[in-house]
Image (cartoon, rainbow, N blue to C red; front, side, top):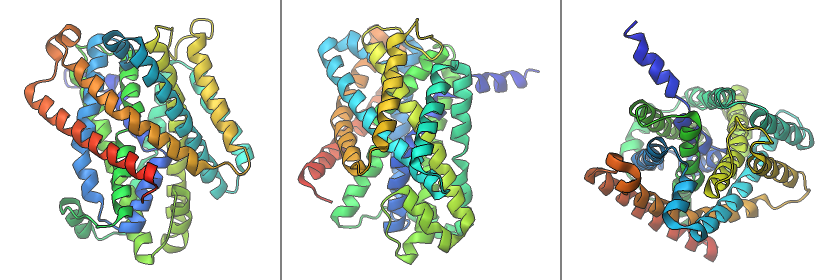
Length: 410
């Protein structure tokens, strides 16, 4: 019985970290990883390994703030920095999340079109499903569905083994840094960083910790969920790169998105590889399409003291439910507009994320080191060195990304 109690305690806190990190492997992320593997083979695998500690550190700090304070990231920003900076941050977060949610519904449309289902059917149905899931569900049930969708990412692991890579070559690429001296490589390297550490993920993991009711006493176990989720998400990303690097790179296949990769796999690796890749894309897009509007709704309501929560009814939290509903409906509607420039929309979201991320990370460091807020749970010296180093690298890469985007380089 004594042995079972720790296991039950661990199972009780699983969810927020795994869901937040898994949602980061959305349709845009899968597309980025697929292009990296198809264009450069295993060359970029070492970057994913190098980025994992940074991702873990940032997610852990966000989760710790939620467990210690019982408040979301947006609420802490307002209390610590005032209304004006908070309003600007929330405006950018809403615009970024709305634009990225459009990309998720595009991923759903693309995945279902591989199975022969038109977007004019799949997108409205998907929008209705994700809306009902959150607005009509409870936190416990929604979390179970999100965890189930996260588990489907195992399809990418299976697809990688079906591709039969040379694992010695994969291992060598993992530990051997290599940079290809061309603009496209640099742009893609920055894109890998941006899709791994996205601004909305810090809001999501902290809000999930708070909504689940995780306290500082439970944090010693909950932090493993957050850290393991970050590691697992990057492992899945590596398997996506391995699959496309093994099959598409030697064939010289040119792809621009995840659905291109899925279609290209069929004649080279067989229909099962295409099926697994498509199922993974559909699951990832559904998860992110539900999570992104949820993150925006949580953050904005927390920032201005409005009622929020999955367990709240329309009468209890009208603005929370209204924001979530509005983002889903508008994003799904955009996908149904003929000739819409989805690439342009994704570029806009990338630029907004680039502006928002450095501010959020600096806000986070100020808050997590404030003893008046965090008490004895402030960062230690070693943690601060690692965290500030991570932030400086992210800010530098973000600045380069913005410059390249504005100048049209890459």
